[in-house]
Length: 375
Image (cartoon, rainbow, N blue to C red; front, side, top):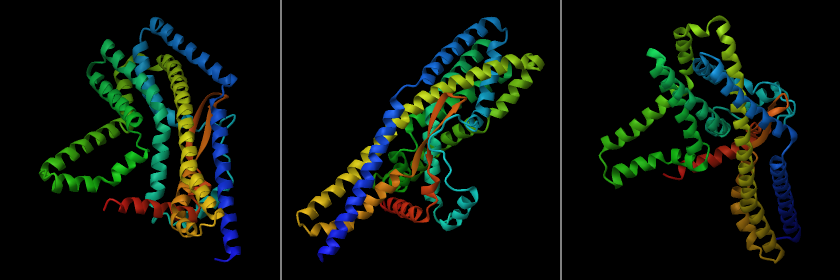
């Protein structure tokens, strides 16, 4: 190998090391910034405590407080996604670098149909990552629903309210526990064909048992998802039709309780999302360090010592190093607050990355390799 070629390889590795270390430093600095308290965070905590006391007071003052709470809880489920559309007073990670037309034009370049699995996986991860911090707040709200329903008695719709509340609790606690965005969960989905094959052929389990167990689990999951995501509106209408107390001016206490529920869930979501994003940033720094920076430094050291066989090794393993680096940049951190209070932190796909045809092609090839590996 010519000295000029070897020098060029060393410079290339040096640039990659520099870029990786800058990325690691950025993530660590962002992690430190998230850990620091600010004045609005303490104010949000005091406001949450006041809201709890307000609901205790309303419990003793309002004759139909339990019904108001139950009605507000299903309104909350309907309006909560739209809360994230309220403009934030300060945000990180949401600056738009391109116009909408440019992004739409890019969709043709990335061959959306061919790469639907890759982009679908990215959106799947983003949805469940950002749903996880809602688990505690929603679970508490709907646990109170169940208690109030049992204590108050809603007649023929009591079973419906309890069923709906339990489904929502299971849905969000399932996200909290299973973490469907995690590598282990996704790998288990990709490996399901191998698992079925082993259960039928290697363990000699009857086909009907395998189908029955998988079918039962799939049915339960589908029932929970439908009940949690599609039926709350039906349940809300049933409650409104059954209770005349919340007609006319009776809606005012419902709205007061609704606002308190929105802010209480928001406070819980903000606290848990902060911790989640910190953990994800730690993981990103760990991946960049262990699978990008360290291997690059090893190859750079070998080349410095004159071990020219390191060039061939680097060429063979470069795709793995590149994939680890690119995968770490698919998501970025964003934040959204309500008029300066109750900040929530999100992990969102970076459009400049996922709409880059070259990067999408690399990610698509990486996913295809994972899908083919079990076979």
